[in-house]
Length: 76
Image 1 (cartoon, rainbow, N blue to C red):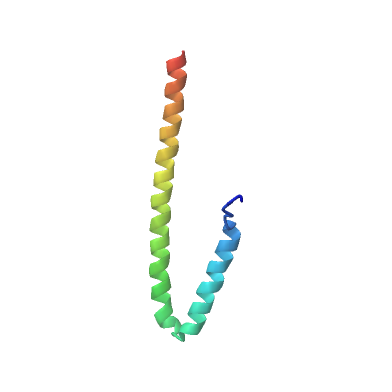
Image 2 (image 1 turned 90 degrees about the vertical axis):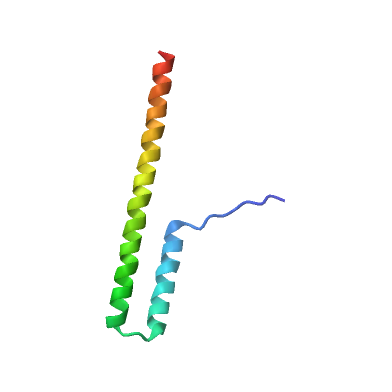
């Protein structure tokens, strides 16, 4: 038997998250004056995580590029 992991497409995962968050917010019965600072804080955290991910991926990419440049230099 072949055990293949099926990864959920990003668009499907995104839509599920949006739907879940919308339902949670709608059922919280909290007024917008309470929801706004909560959502603003979450957004700031997402922005920070994105910046960290970008920096990490850029560093990995630059390291890989440097490695390929070193390989080219070694062969010459």
